[in-house]
Length: 468
Image (tube, rainbow, N blue to C red; front, side):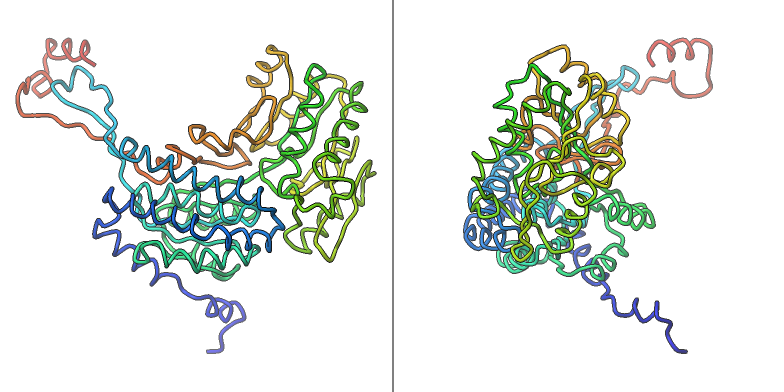
């Protein structure tokens, strides 16, 4: 029988089942459940990041043009802080969590017992290729799981560093790294995992969820969307502009929680645009394409995508491109067509649309009419407006009078809502994502009252109604 083209393609995809079988066998021994093992792995991961910060920075520079400060703040330092926080609280998080027990079950004790899920798959993203691969991994090993890491092939230098260093520092019997592209991802998704954690775009998120549904595998999807930024006329304009520029153009705008577009009252558009332009000059100089602190676009395909967005609108400021260096200057677009690709697709790049509106009430309605975003930003000194936005607008996270800074607080779970994702992590939320909180009730043999057993009587029924 001659194989079909589809069959030939399937044969070319390497099977990941043997790898999964080996990890499942290790998990079955109970090795990863030990708190000592978990702490050893966290310590080893901390050493991996600390010992190799120069190599990691070199890789991030190669993949995304990240400067040393940005690489440290958003990737290396972020991970070290995450590891330290997790290690500090691991004993508490992994302990039984007491809950109340109803009178009908007295004497007895009830609690939730965190237990690891098993063997999990973590699929990282290219825009923060170290952090978005290893931060979920911190939570997974803290919870006592075996894990397979799939770094993004679009950030090959960082992927190679992860693949080289993980086996040198971590327990290779319980942790594995799989590099590659679509074929390897397809093979991994064909397996039955105990949990899949994916960070990336909505389109691939649907593929991951579809594959997981075949095995009823639970998923965490950290996606994205168009995160709005509402600027009120009562906000401090200079500070507002400084913080928006920092949040929008970090990593050349390739951040899932970057402000995607700004909603501002019509009468203040000119002043707002002037403040943003002044701050861009202050942070990135007269020629941002030459700034040592400004990153590059991940590849030529994404650069062409961004160029296509601005070709159909009128560019107010910036827009210059260095195709050889894969750089696109900070770009402002004022009052674009709301049906344009720029306003329909997640930008994920250094273009900022500014939408004039009659009032912030109109801004709230604009946000509510769109899919729920991963992040929402509001700049205002009006407490009543703040409360209206918080109560009327849904988003994965909200930051008032700043951008992205909520990511620095491990006590705040991070995750999307609706189209922007499902599930959350960071801190205890990450530990819980990779754990099953097993409900336990424990009773003794004494005080075994007869009212709950047949034969039933009116007296027994009366007692039961009072106790339940």
